[in-house]
Length: 143
Image (cartoon, rainbow, N blue to C red):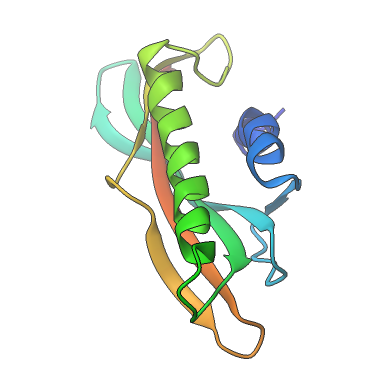
């Protein structure tokens, strides 16, 4: 499996549990209740050693959800759903439940790169909003 396949599979169960939908890969579906896994970078060099390197795999989770201009709590529900995913990432890091990048790699941590989800955009025609969560996996890879 590639790192992309590994990461998509790693988040799939949690996304299905939270949003009830499967993750699309590098495709931002604009339908409500959809979640996308977007790659930011893979194998980005952080620090080079003689026969190894510390690298990053960066990704974003894009949650497309219903949007409201009323005083209901629909927008709050969407923000809380996104925050639950971020909490799950934090828990995976604390318990060292990391994606398996193979025997030449040792994952050091998985982390959120922000302290709350971003409201990335609102589509006024379909009344949907996109919430973005940026994350990374920091790993050590032997040559």
